[in-house]
Image 1 (cartoon, helix red, strand yellow):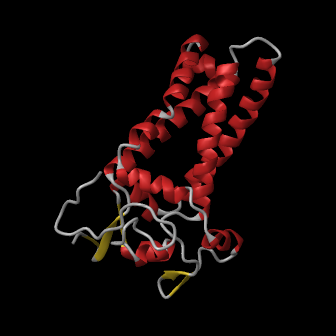
Image 2 (cartoon, one colour):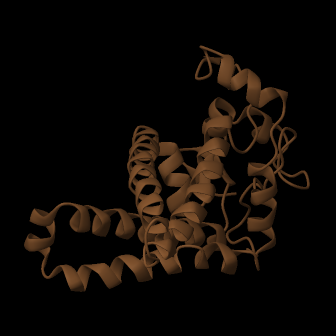
Image 3 (cartoon, helix red, strand yellow):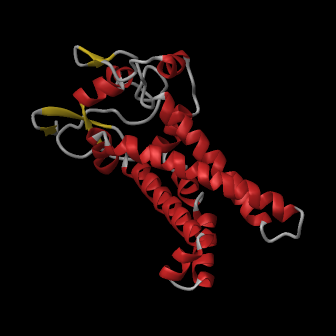
Length: 228
C-alpha cells in the first residue's frame, strides 16, 4: 500500500482521466487568452499580429471537445461522466447547507460522493458553454443579422466562462489535496473522508461510491494499478 506521511492513499483518477482534464484545461485557457487578445487591441499588439492570434483561437476552439471524445475509450472516464450527470438528494443538501465544508471526527458532515454538487454544476456548465461557443463561433462567419446575435451571445458567454473558470481555479488552489489528486491520481484516505465521505466509505465497490458513482477509489497496494 502506498503511503504519504503515513496515510493510506486511494486512487481517485486514472491516467486517462487526468490527461482528459489537463488537455481540456490547456485548450480552454488558450481559448480564453486568445479571446482577450482579440477583444482588446492592446493585448493583440503586444502578443503579435491579430491575424496570427485569430486562427490559434479558432483551432483551439475546434479541438476543445477532442480530449473528451478520446476519453470515452476509457471505462473509468465513462463512469465518471455518469457520476457527474447524476444528481441526488445529497447534492441538494450540499447546495443548501451552510456547513458543507464542516468536518466532525475527521468526516465531512454532508455525505458527498466522488463529486460534489458544485463540481457537477461546473462540469455541466462547461460542457454546455463549450457547445454554445462552438455554434456561435461558427455563426460569426455568417451574414447579418445572424452574426450580430451570435456575437452578442459569444461575447457575454465568454465573460461568464471567465468568471466560472476563475472560481474553479480558486477552489482548486485552496485545496492542496484536490490538486494532488488531479496531478498524481491519488489522495489520502483522510482527505477523502473529509471532502467525499460517501466515496471514501466504498472505495472498492463497483463505481467507487455509494452516493453517485464514479471511477477509481481502490487502495493502492504494492505499486501500480492498471488504468483504463
